[in-house]
Amino acid sequence: MTTIFICGDPKDSGFAHLLKSCLSRTYRITYVKNYSVNQWGKGYELLALELPRFDAVDTESPVFLLKKNCIPDFSLPDNGTVIAFSENEEQIKALKSCASHVITCGFGKTDTFSYSSLSDEEVVVSLNREITAFSGKKIQPLEIPSEIPQGTDIYSVIAFTALRILLDDFNSEIGELI
Image (cartoon, rainbow, N blue to C red):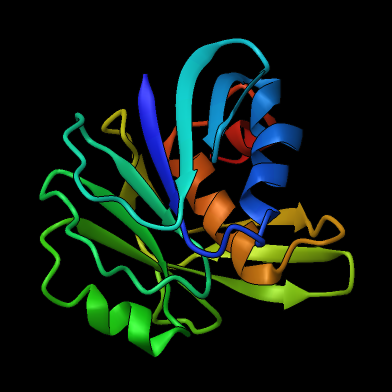
């Protein structure tokens, strides 16, 4: 099981929507937010915990999916992976001393993930450098066309695509590309 910590504004529901509509096709997701627990899909298990902040995290290889306005004022474990919004200077500054592996997502070519094309309904997400997925597989730079669901911002789609590639979402349309 992989544990995903979603941090930031509780009103921003972009990641929850993407988890439910896309990842639940190939994964069994247990999603916890506030005092609610939902389960969607079937397959390899993902635990997604959405809270504005965390006091302590002691899990094996956790993933932190930071919302665009999140300023992490909590400790991140050394064994974690953080998906962060490079356009949020305060967020990036807060991560400078973090020992976790930070993957930047944003609108520039210096980001690990950015985009190469954008329309009202679709974005082409670019992986700009080689990364290693959680399985150990090396993923070379590539481009992935993605829909922008209503109510979801571009950063959320880019960060969510980064998560899918790290998870080796091979039983999906992304798996056909990588």
